[in-house]
Amino acid sequence: MPSENIHVAIVEDDNDIRETLALIINGTPGFTCKLVYSDCESAIADLPNQYARVVLMDIQLPGKSGIEGVRILKPKLNEVDFVMLSIQQDDESIFNAIKAGASGYLVKDTPPAELLRAITEVCQGGAPMSANIARKVIQSFHASTVAPSPLSERETEILKFLCEGQNYRTIAEKLFVSPHTVRTHIKNIYKKLHVSSRAEAVRKAVDDRLV
Amino acid sequence: MPSENIHVAIVEDDNDIRETLALIINGTPGFTCKLVYSDCESAIADLPNQYARVVLMDIQLPGKSGIEGVRILKPKLNEVDFVMLSIQQDDESIFNAIKAGASGYLVKDTPPAELLRAITEVCQGGAPMSANIARKVIQSFHASTVAPSPLSERETEILKFLCEGQNYRTIAEKLFVSPHTVRTHIKNIYKKLHVSSRAEAVRKAVDDRLV
DNA sequence: AACCAAATACCCCATTTGCGTTAGCTCATA
DNA sequence: TATGAGCTAACGCAAATGGGGTATTTGGTT
Image (cartoon, rainbow over all chains, first blue to last red; front, top):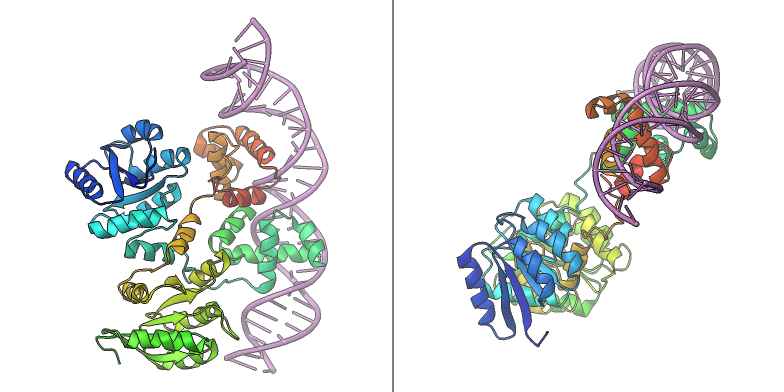
């Protein structure tokens, strides 16, 4: 099946775009595109029986979205790299696509040269992304300047134990204090976090990265 | 202070590399590099009093690491973009740098043209990354093929309510079933998750992304 | 037909939890 | 000096929780 050429598949509902892409790819030495689909369903049905190294996947498709498509196909085609090719640039779409298994994400107005470069790059273990997509991905790591914890050191320590499912008694034993003291601390924690149960406290601790 | 040129600062302990980089940058129209530091401490002391649009930061430095440097400088220089320039390609370094506030991450053997392109890109709101760095970042989202949830649909539904801090009664009301039923479900959830309290269940739900 | 998982519902009972309240001690800051 | 924050400790009480059961119904699998 394979050859020296990179075999590309396209899933895209717009006829013009799909054909243009195929033409560009087939017209470039080193690239081949013999598999084109106008919707996810046919790609899901056919792709597992074909050979492709890279799949260019639109997100907005009639029926199943490209994201769902990747979610279904990627587990079956583990060595295949999926590159989203979309006008959507909202965080939802981006992160869902990546979580679904996409290895690249390009905006649709990417010039042909860039696109071919991206296909090559993803084959070499890269993760091509349009500039602002990459920035959004990076920013999702920037710990969003969390509000400083309202808890004292001791309270944070106790909150950690709460997150582990410890009860008053065992926490007290570990900290060498009275269970009464632990209770008092936990009451104060609840007040500061505006919660009224362990479950909520744990949830808030995780969400706000207090532990 | 600003001009049409992009002002770049360099923090790099290797004299050769530092000077070479500065030469490349200054020798390219549109770029200027007047600020060079051989260690983090001097950059931390001086940069806030200077103007730079982009900082190229080595990671392995004598004294404070480049990552610590970004962690300290980025909050003070919010409009400045930090691009790591490092031989380190371990996950630790990459993710710590990004979390610290870096907007780009290039390996040190990046050719000059690429480097200049990266500087331009980061100024335009991008996040330049070497191919395999980008892939690692993307892969960190690929939800590590989590073991399929052992919980039934109903149980997952109830686990969500537990995570919100709801009690038996309120959950029962929302699901239009008896509190007894909710109790039974929760007991089964505990068995399946090998926990014995709401706090632990919430923790596990979050950790294993069951909700 | 037999079997099982899942969802529903109920019982008892000991333990844990959450809330209100009080209070002593230390340390820092106003 | 005093005022507050943080850590410590205690008492009582009502409500919630967790563990042990049992049981019926439904729907799918063998």
